[in-house]
Amino acid sequence: MNQKEKIFKQWKENTSSRIENWKKGLIDKEEELVLDFSESSLSSLENHIISKYSLVDLKNKEKNNELDGIVSYMGETLIRLIPESKWIIYTEDKTNVYYNLPCVYTKYSGSISVHFLLREILNAKTFDIIETRLKAVLKCDEEIRKHLKEN
Image (cartoon, rainbow, N blue to C red; front, side):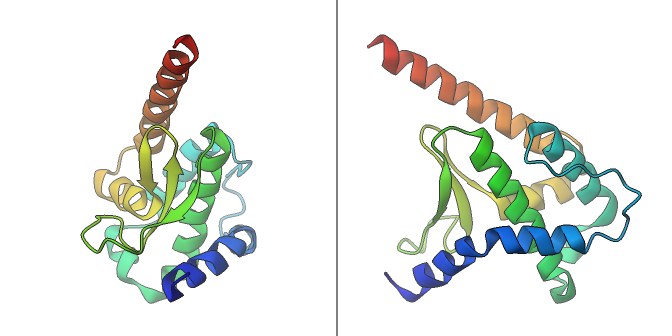
């Protein structure tokens, strides 16, 4: 295990505490942000992201912990919703677009970089990025599993 993989392993082990610390730090408690690791919570989170953050915040070191909590929550939720998915990091191939980024690996639909997903949400400023991606992955997963079962 190389140094980057060790750091990633530690990052994965601290995911729950990062999410909890981020949840505790939410300023707008009156905002009914239900974070129960459901598909609907991802939609609520997407609305929260669009209303509270901009692309500039991705470079703001003061926002690192908040944004890390957000991507950790997105990833953990996707892992719970997508069968046989898990955290992964690509440390060998420097040409890989996801090099050194925590990703959600899906068995049949490739990887999802939660950092890229966050950037995509902030760039598009629309409220259906996560839902669209999740539905596409689940549909592909279901079709492949059905095909495998038939053969």
